[in-house]
Structures are given as C-alpha cells and as structure tokens.
Image: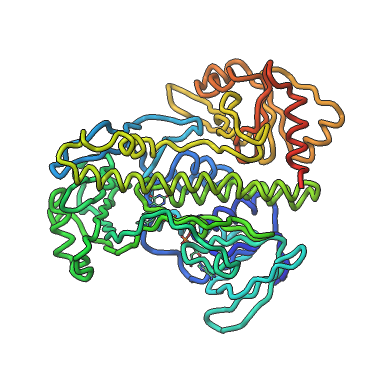
Length: 507
Ligand SMILES: Cc1cc2nc3c(=O)[nH]c(=O)nc-3n(C[C@H](O)[C@H](O)[C@H](O)COP(=O)(O)OP(=O)(O)OC[C@H]3O[C@@H](n4cnc5c(N)ncnc54)[C@H](O)[C@@H]3O)c2cc1C
C-alpha cells in the first residue's frame, strides 16, 4: 500500500465517510483510518435535513437515505397532559430550495452500513482497527503515525491534508492541543429506541414534552421504530432508569409493553461544546470532533455534513491551484465555526425553553425572548462571513444562501433533481448568454466552471428559482451550491469576478 495521500481522514463515522466519498468523486487519493471494525450499531442521529440530502447527491449517496427515510411532519412543545403549547412547526408536504423535504427521519445503522459498503468498493483506501497515535505537521505535508489494534504494528503515512472526523473525544483535536469552548449544557438523558410489533396510529409530530416532573422528547421516527429521550433527574439512580420496567413505565403514556420491543436504552451526557479552532495549518476538524450539541434540533450530524461539504471543494481546489491555498482554506473556519456555534447555542435554547415551560404555571409567563429563540431555532441561518462578494454575505444578492436546485416537476411532484447540471466546480447561472473575456475564461477554467443559461420555463417551474432570479441577472455559485454573489444594476459581473479572484488569491 502506498504511504502518500492527498487527504487522510481519521474516523469513518457518518461525517468522515461523507468527506471521503466527496473527495473520491473528485479523484483525490484518500486514506480513511478507523479504529473500530464495524459501524456503530445503535442509532444516534435520527433526522437528516434537506441540505444534507442535497450534499448526499453530490457524493452520489442520496438513494441510501431516501430509501430508508420518512418525511417529518412537524414538531411541537407539549405539556404534561400532551396539550400543545404555542405554535407548532408544521412542515408536512413542504419542499425547500434544496428540492427535498425540510427534515426526514432515517435509520442510521442501515444508512451507515450501506455507505461503508459503498466506500469499501471504491478507490478509497480504508484501514479498519487502526488507531491514530501521532501527528507531525511539516512544512507542506502532515506525517501521521498509526497503530493496528490487532497486530500492534505501527505505520507512517504522509498527506497534504489531515482531517479529524474522529468524534467527540477526537484524538486529532487532542494531539493538536485544540481547546474547546463550553456553551453551557451538560445534562444526562436516557435515550430509548423501540421497535413496534405492529402498526399503531401515533402522532407524527416530534414533541418536546415540558413536564415539570421530567422533561422528555418523543420522536415518531422511521417506521417500525420510535424514540423517546428522558432527562435523568439529579437525585436519580442511573442503574434504575435503564431497567426494562422503568422504561416501560416512562413509555406507558404512549404504548403498552406488549406493543413494542426495546432495542436499547443508553445514557448520554448531552454536551454543548465548540472547538476553538477548526483548522491548524494543514489539519482540519469536522463533525463532532469540532462541535457537539444536545440533539434537540436533530442537527449534530447535519452540521458535520455541512462541514464536510464546505471543506471538500476547498481541499480539491487547493491541491489543484497553488495560487489559491491560504484564503481558501482559512475560509473553512471563518464560515463554519460561527454557523456551528449558532446550531449548538440554539439547541441549548430549546432545552432551556422546555425547562422554562415546565417550570411556569402558565406558559404565557415564559419570557418572550426565550420563546422566540426556542422556536426560531428550527430555522437554519445562511452563512455570513467568508468567500462571498465583499467578504460578508449580502442577503439582497442571495450570497451566503444555497442556490435553488433545478428540478423537473410532473403532476406537482419532483420527478428529477438536477444539481448535476451545475457540475462539481463553480457555476455561472444567468438569464442571458454570457460572454467572458479571455482572462475571465482562464480564471473560470481554473475553477472548473459550468456556464448555464436558464430557460424561462425552468424559472416558471420552480418558485424558488423565480424568487432568486428576481434578485439579479447572473449568479456565481460555489461548488457547495452556496451563492458567492449575483450581478444587478448595483454590481457588474466583472466586479463580481475581480472580487472572487482577489479573495481566492489573498494571503
Ligand atoms: C441521542 C442522540 C441523538 C442524535 N440525533 C441526531 C439527529 O437526529 N440528527 C443529527 O443530525 N444528529 C444527531 N445526533 C448527533 C450525531 O449522532 C452526531 O453528530 C454524529 O454521529 C457525529 O458523526 P461524526 O462522524 O462526526 O462522529 P462519530 O459518529 O462519533 O464518528 C467518529 C469515528 O471516529 C472513530 N475514531 C475515534 N477516534 C479514533 C482514532 N484515534 N483513530 C481512528 N478512528 C477513530 C470512531 O470509531 C468513530 O467511528 C444525535 C446524537 C445523539 C447522542
């Protein structure tokens, strides 16, 4: 086996596996190092969002999820009598600009195993039962030392880039001495997964249960599964709460014991932490290695998928175009860290709102600020600072948001998702044919750019596209489908191009 790689990824959980697949699509030489032999057998993540499904399309993996998922109908806060508090989040039947349902339930062991099988059949080199033990950053390469957990044989590899996707107790993060910021949530919950023995009509709304006796969450899940999460009280015996009879008593308000079998009950400490650095020289952190969030928004893994998508094209371009390396790679942290921080903080807000509703005699007594933050948390923000026109995303030109996916619709149903038209590099999408100068052509060739002129009927088919195309005439879209900027009577296409060039070349 060769010892030199473009990218070495430590950890092949869902996030490291996605990055490996994205880089493999671009022909990079990738090594994935994983300490466990098998994938993690119990589900942790249970929801995947629209952006993640679109990212899966770029890796050719969307079928793995779409074949094993159920669209989420909504979410609500309820009291101990299971009556709704405030407005519910209703998303049944909605399709976002990414051309997928906003959120879907899925069964993680099935998807993780399928993806592992696909990676094992690909060009990616995979070493299982191999543990990272040391990293040395040299001038232009990273040296990586690993140890086989069965034979104890040590190996040395070199790579242009190293990515730590090795989860919450990340060895990469520790070896790089990256500290973590505590964002103020540390509570133990018991998570219970059950399998229904027969089909039973139950609420399809995920529920945050604001019961003063015990906070809990009910998750309808992808059938035949259901999930509950129960807060462990300060004075509670943890051994007691994991017992079958305790779990059955906690689930009693929904199901009788003969209607289901318990697949697992596990105690998790829900944390809210953020690595202080997502990048040190040529090493990067993605996924839980970079951020951990309580699962109230169902966004931990999705946040990791955004990291992988944001980093993948930057690594590809940095390896190809030596002119662009510094600013391009630094933008990973600039763009991703504040976004991940929002997700973690807002998940914590949901936890705080649940506690406030449970403590209040009347839900109207709960401060409006907390209520607004709790509910608004379900809305994922755009990116803010980074590789966008002017450096700060400007919502009036759509920059920092995802360009709508082209779709084909028949009888009100999406029959084709067409991101492949944009290719895997940059895209210039315009209402009229665009003519590039020789210099612009050279520059956009370096960015592996596709030029697309949109037909009027494409715009009419897709209300997302029509609202975006009202913002301007020509859009520059990055490989991760985020908009760099668009031309209008305020900014010319030439100005956009010069700004993009300067930003990529900055040191
Ligand atoms: C109860 C619960 C519910 C959740 N629900 C959701 C949800 O609905 N939606 C959502 O988006 N997220 C959810 N999450 C969060 C989600 O599970 C995590 O964010 C996600 O699993 C992180 O993936 P990862 O690949 O970054 O890390 P991991 O899945 O932890 O993978 C890390 C991998 O690195 C390997 N590794 C570690 N150290 C080394 C080493 N030294 N050498 C080699 N390999 C190493 C590990 O063996 C592991 O395979 C939930 C979490 C919990 C606990």
